[in-house]
Length: 444
Image (cartoon, rainbow, N blue to C red; front, side, top):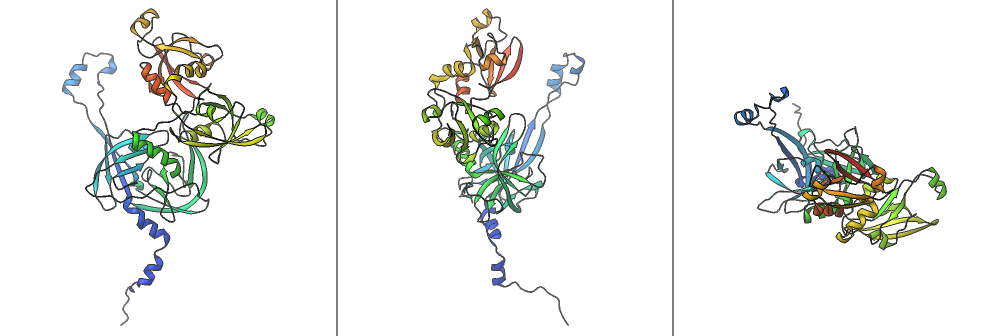
């Protein structure tokens, strides 16, 4: 009788099937984690309040306790050292009350946030184990080739440790993710990235970590985007050392090149941005950048427009060294700039020169004498005519309450907010006038 059965797999056949792709998965899988977060909200809305009667407020608070709404979300991450540091997306752990991590071997840990950065959409969380943990060393992304094979490992739709593969479709993609938010230099792959495997690793065929997958572009179908690992390295170092990203200050304002300027500078297509101003004693000024220079590339990455420039500069931190390719008087030159923080001694000059404002710290006495609605913030005492502040409509007596969404209650807060400005060509202020507040964007 002929028995149908399964032929044994020879050692040679098994070896031949262990392709570089399989080896890469075996190498990296133990370091890929699934991330579960819990958000807790406590609504305390009085159901009687809609009538305009607040008499029931105390009763409502005392006898109807607030409920807890728990929302569990899924994401991925990758261990980058044996001490338990995990690299993931900022949006994966944003607003999380609790973070839970599961490894491929089913071990579970509670995680704490070391640092998170919304501008780069990167975060570091940490788990603690009694013994060293598996991890993947960060590779490089400056030598990627369009068409080369890549793979991702993550947690799509809650399906743990799912492997997908594809190719690099494009490099240096800029993605708009909402008002005034542009992410630059993305790797585009032909594999979908959804919230479940967002934060997981993008790997080359050798198993090297070349990017962090992100689902920040929700309209993508059949394609995915990843943050290049070279971009992430600078952010990771800052988050681990300081818990935040210390963005430095270049000290230039820039503008787009319109058709007239392109003809003037004899450029055959839209590329680069024009340096409109250089601050004294800034990193750019000391390195020799001048008004009228055209910045064509940053570290060999072509600069397309002002949004592209801002996005690329956002990944550089204090002490970063940047190489600029510049067109000046029809000749190509290069300048290397080391990024620094705005010195505290320069804050007043910066405010006067770049914003066109003379300001002073608010006080009870100043608020009374000027009939201000608050004694907090920085009061505008004078506005320089035809300055950025003047053009946008800021008036003496206005009070600056936020700068780039950083709270400003006193001079110390203001100095800190200024110190964190990395591109002063676009500054968002929350200005209070009387009892009304409004946002304005200053573009010196």
